[in-house]
Image 1 (spheres, helix red, strand yellow):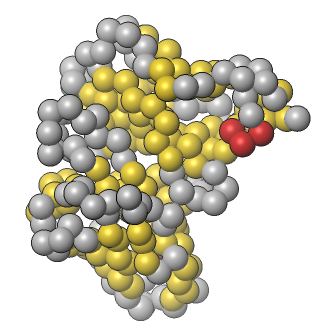
Image 2 (cartoon, chains in turn purple, green):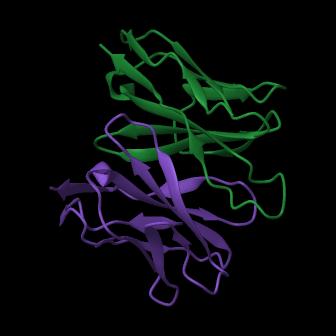
Image 3 (cartoon, chains in turn brown, purple):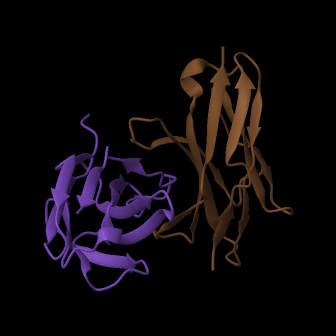
Length: 115
Length: 117
């Protein structure tokens, strides 16, 4: 069964600094997708970044990058130059297989950006 | 382009009642999935529909059911409500399964917050 582990319930970062949110996963399927979502206090989940299991390079989207270490089964999210608006809950998720399938989410990390 | 729309946004029910939640996906998205979010259990997958067919189902009792219509709109129903059903119910749509290039990220609605008294 697929499993996502986020070991940091809460993180603090100073504005303009970089922060890394940890995510490890477990799956026996060689084909999978890894995602990060942001959930502000308003409740709506927002897609941030995607990494496919066969992708050779780490994904980047603006200030977000994904540090993908396949052998370690980790997919850490790096946010550079943190902004106050980055304060939110962040979820790591995985979807197995090539079909649409279901996504398994981690428990989330609450990030607080300090001014 | 309109996002995922969920109705109602908030509702209060009592134990034993039933509830129906509605979700309109992004235009062109045929995959719709539902998740339950609670402080204790986190985000739990309920079910996924694609072209009116349920393709995946999570580990929830039969009181939880859903369906998808020909226009891709989806509804989920919870019968005989229990206190533990109080949660934020999130609907998400996706392009996955409709092409080779899309990555299948989920586009979420704002959720329906259900309180069971």
